[in-house]
Length: 163
Figure 1 (tube, rainbow, N blue to C red):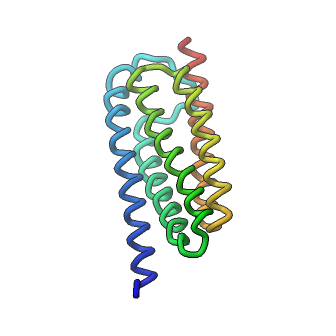
Figure 2 (cartoon, rainbow, N blue to C red):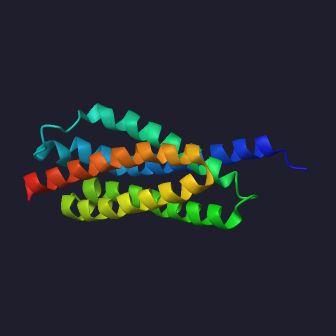
């Protein structure tokens, strides 16, 4: 018989590793862009210092993994809801990584702005789905949604200042 707590721990660790891994890969575009192109563009007065982004995103990736792992842990009780929630989670995670490529890799704030709006919508839908399955997972996604709301305003401002 499967040990439920071990299984849940495993699922959480797999999801955290997946999220941190995706964050690391997208961070490669970010790091290169920050060291070159990003220095040359105009930024709004509310732009945080560059050192803020890595710890915030690392924390968010860990929390996203925790949230997804908790949801995945309910697969036995709510298989269809969990599959739906994790599908939205996968889409938003892919969009999350794509933003870094569009903004820092292609140096295209307008395309990144359009994409981050889609990302925000997918994060919101993931929140809705996760909240139905596990309230803690839903609450975690509120933090993520708030940060991406700020990132959307920041992206829009950078596009506007540099168009």
